[in-house]
Amino acid sequence: MSSDPQEDERKEYLEERRLLIEAESQSVQSFDKAMLTLSAGALALSITFIRELAPEPKNLCCLYLTWASFCLSLLSTLASFLTSQSSMRRQRDILDASQEERDSKDDGVNIGGSQRNVWIPITKWLNCFAIMFFVVGVFCLAAFAAANIRK
Image (tube, rainbow, N blue to C red; front, top):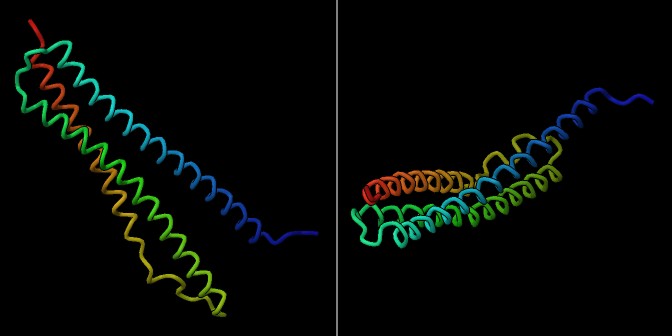
C-alpha cells in the first residue's frame, strides 16, 4: 500500500512547522522570564547599592531614571503577557472563522484573508519597549554607580 508523496510531504511540512512553533513558544517564555528576572534583580541591586555602598548618594536623577526604567521594563513585560494571551485568543477566533468559512464553501478561495490580529504588533512593541527600558536602566545604574563609588 503506497502513500501519496504529496501527502507525505505535507505531513512532514506540518510536523516541522509544529516543532518550530513549539520552539518559538519556548523562546518567548524564556525571554519573558529573563526580562522579569533581570529587571527585578537590577532594581533590587540598585536599592542595595544605595543602602550598602552609597549612603549619601550623588546624582539622584540617574538613580530615579534607573528605577523608572526598570519599573517600565517590568510593566511592559507584564503587559505583553496580557496582549499575548489576547493575541492567541484572537488568532484562534480567526482560525475558527476560517474553518467555518472553509466548511461552508466548496472552493475555499481567499479564506480568512481580511481578518487581522492587532494584538500581535502590540505584543511585539511591548517586548521592544521592555528591552529598551532595561538597557536604559542598566546605563543609568552604571552612571549612578560610577558617580558614587568611593575613591
